[in-house]
Image 1 (cartoon, rainbow, N blue to C red):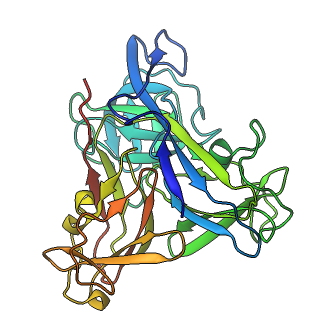
Image 2: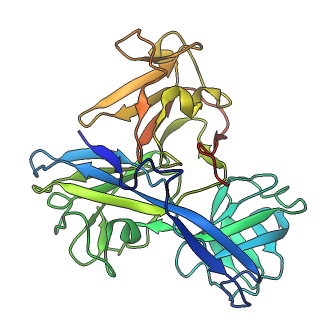
Length: 340
């Protein structure tokens, strides 16, 4: 079994407050803006394993990297938004992966990967949705660097935290679900690689809402530290209307099946029989525990007991499997703590 342990006691509200200051007129700075962001850490512990008997863990990254810009939206539409006098440098946020997160107004909590920028406009991957309506008065946003394979698990600038190897069979593997396909990544001692490709994968993005599945073969066991900035704003997680999605916990606190409020998603299919219902699947270290909502309570396949309080651990992730077909939706996650 794996464990996710807070490094700082009780997480929020005892998180260390690290001040991030932005001022002046530099291209990466918002004029006259000062912000303090709480930061924290958790540790994912993976037991010793082997090539023949690997250990597996589902995990999420409930932190972001520190923001590099805070600003106000002037207009937004389609797949772009214009900021109020930011004085950016062209391609500043596209040379390495960055996200923009809407902090207030319509769409607060939505996060988009930046694909390009000019001196005052961001182009984003809008995930098939329009940014129309995201710019009423006082709509604010922030920009922060994306988590990548290298920034999370090590690489060129920091030691690799996982076992390396010339092939996927020898190395630890990070598996990520995109659409209907799982992709496998490993570090060959020089760079991150994708199974079946010769291209360097160091900058592969791990989205804030994206869970990853780690397959470890290390005979010494692993402690994988996860840390960064804790959101003090509600989060919105995009959920597909059909198929699978591996979803990360958005805040560094444990939760329960009922507390996640997944059953409230538009089009979420409840049923008295698991075969007819949408499902939440939690990895227990050896296999998937499968849960479904009856319309009244959560139950586990193979048991009729109420599972509303089934725990979802800190730094964890859960697999959603939708049997129906409905439109994509957004899962809201309220801030689970008081913040001044």
